[in-house]
Length: 110
Image 1 (cartoon, rainbow, N blue to C red):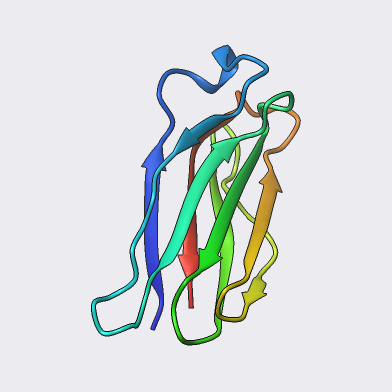
Image 2: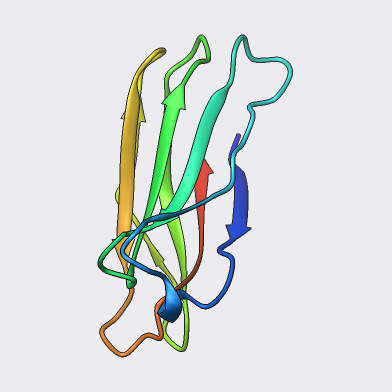
């Protein structure tokens, strides 16, 4: 099963300060024990970089990756990260140099 969730970053990515902007959270389906908790953020210094951070609180192994929407450039996906139950990990992707920055950060969970 593949699940997607995207959350839009507040304001324009070009106005993001040196503090990372957190957006979003997600829960796994009710059939899973526990949940997979994810957050998306724009990097605190590099506003072309989006980061998805997940904690696997479920009873199964999952894979996830960051899905970054880039302003005036092609959208990008991060590397797949495998998490066993109880593990935490991050996936990130960087928009092209000509992008206007990260518009939103989401994630795909398998």
